[in-house]
Amino acid sequence: MDKKERRVGTISRGIRCPIIRKGDDLAAIVADSVLEAAEIEGFELRDRDVIAMTESIVARAQGNYVSVDDIAADVRAKLGGETVGVILPILSRNRFAICLRGIAKGAKKVVLMLSYPSDEVGNELVSLDKIDAAGVNPYSDVLSLEKYRELFGVNKHPFTGMDYVEYYGDLIRECGAEAEIIFANQAKAILDYTDCVLTCDIHTRARTKRILKAAGAKVVCGLDDIMTQPINGSGYNDKYGLLGSNKSTEDTIKLFPRECKDLVLDVQERVIKACGKHVEVMVYGDGAFKDPQGKIWELADPVVSPAYTDGLIGTPNELKLKYLADNDYKDLSGEALREAISESIRKKGNDLVGNMASQGTTPRQLTDLIGSLCDLTSGSGDKGTPVVLVQGYFDNYTN
Image 1 (cartoon, rainbow, N blue to C red):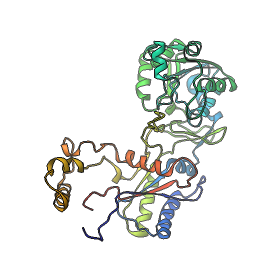
Image 2: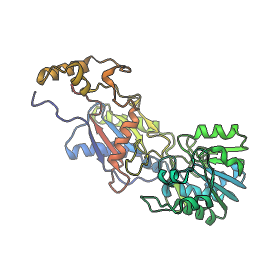
Image 3: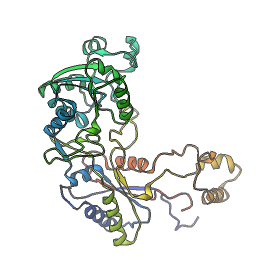
Image 4: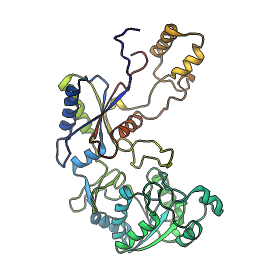
C-alpha cells in the first residue's frame, strides 16, 4: 500500500462562528468561518465537502421570532376563541410549553388530549409495564385525568424530572383558560369534547387532520397552520408554522427558518470563488436518531434539512464490504482481496436497489444521514460550533 495513500475517511469538524444576530450576512459569515478555520487549522477544502449550518442561526439571521400574544391572536382567529381541543402534543418545555401558553391565551377552555404511554417522539407518560398491569388498551381506551391518576399516579420524566400532566394543566390555567386533560390515541376521541381542534403532532399530522375532518370536526388546524403569516410585524413560516419552533425567551419563540435555498447557494458560490472547490451546503435541525435508554426519538423538527444544494439530493449508493468479503471473495485475502473489492466498487452501477451486496447500507436520504452526523457534532449546548464541515463523506474504499 502506498504510504501517500489517504488513510482517513469521513471527518466531521465543528466550526466556531460569531454569535449570529438578526440581519447578519449569514452566507458571508459561514463561508468566511470555514475558510478561516481551514487556514488556521491547516486543512484544505475538497470538492464535495459538505458545509452545514444549524437551522437556529438561519432563523436568527432572518429574525424569525413570534410572541405568545402573536400566537394567541392567530389561534383565536382560526379556532374561534372558545373551547379548543389541543391534541397529541409532545412533552417538552423547550418545544411545546411556550406554544401552549399562546394557544391557551387564545381560548376560553383548552381540552388537552395527551397520547399515552408516550408522546410522538418517545417521551414517556407512563411505562408499558404499568399499562399492562392496569389492563388498559391505549389504542382504544380514553382516560380522564382522574382515571389516569387513579391507575398510574404521578410519573415524572426520567430526564427532566417534570410531571408534564400537572405542568401543562397549570400552564393553561395560568394563561386564563379553563383546562381539562384526557388521555387517548385516537384523534377523533376529542370530538366528544369540542369540534374545534388543533392537532399538534409532527410527522403524522396529515393523517390526523384527515381523520378529524372525516369524523365531522368543524375546524381543524395543525401547528403548521398557526403563524403562517406575520401578525403585527412578527416572524412567520408559511410552510411549517409553529412546527420546529424553539423557546427563545419566556414570551417569544424562534420559528423554523423560512425558505433558505438562496442561502445555501450563496455559501456554495462564495467558497467556489474563494478557493475553486465545489462544496455542498445544507441547513440542518434535529438529527433522525433514537436514544436507546430514554427511547426518545430526536426528530422534533418537521424535517432534518429545510434547504440543501442539489448535490445532496438522493440516497447512498454503496456496497457492503463485509458482504463482498464473506461471499463473493471469501477465498481471497491480503492484496488480492483488497483489489477485488476495489474493482467491485469501481464497477458498481448507479442504482443498487435489489443488489444483495448493498443490503444493510441504510437507504436513507443523504440530508437525513449527514444532518444527523452534524447534529451530533455541534451538540445542543455550549460548544459554539453552529457550522459543521464534513469531509470525505462521499469517499469509498478506492479513494
